Length: 420
Image (tube, rainbow, N blue to C red):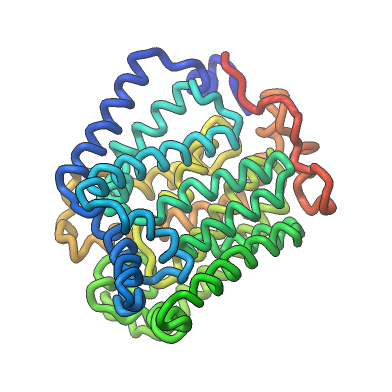
């Protein structure tokens, strides 16, 4: 990693002054207070999950609401909120979502060994909060996607330090709450971490089976939600889905070819992610970019797929900016984010019902950029990774398929980023 004074990386990892943090606090505070003032019950999406828990407490089935798309374990996770007054949720949930998003950013920084007191720590979070529209939308909606925004960088941080079993447990708990990180099973397969993979699968499976036994319709997820997810046939949700399988039919493409195209694109993305995993570079960068490739590939084909899902991968990639071999050094990475700039009115796309077209452009361009980087750009990561004196090819080889029980991820090595 380049940390010299002549490179932007050196400037980014220097300590941020007090006024930097004051500006960050003002941005996050304004965002949170605004969400408190304009939302109720913790946000529209949070309300769906909490209302499902209230329905269950009243003796009904949470799956009576077709928009409740979670495992039975999520019902139990929402019970504490269901017991709180709505006025408390109005304040508590937006503040909690902002806090969790901040913690996710902190984990992403530590994955790349960027100091938490650095300028990148401040500027990156300000850029996400003020310059990336889905950040504010997620705070206002209270969507449980926020659990994945924290769980994924925490998982990769643990994996980078050789704690794969703990990483698997983190993903397993996150999937039990919301199955957004299910594609991460492929990372554990790539790394041949079978015990960790078992936790990824068993934790949500066991918790969901146990929770389902307490529901009026234990098979509700299988008989109601799963068919809904497979068909994705909801006129309201379809307006906000960003995946090609949902957007292309709105442009006149028949549904079957659109779905096939999305599946093929996802398959190519997974192959490129595997190529990135086997490629050179610092282990943290490989973990982040491989995981981003897997998740973006899933977003291309999954139904539903919303713009705030991008927050699961964007902090991971943005925190790797000091690495000379990072995908963030490619111009198309930044161009992909342009449609998400708040306050910009796009002709013919300003309507909320047409926002999905902008979201689809961001998703597809970002997915292609990460996939291309995994195949063509990773070759330069090996040499770049060692520029700062750490994170070279020796470290990169450590986490790639090391035997179970051995710390092959470079735990105990020197920091990859140093303050200048």
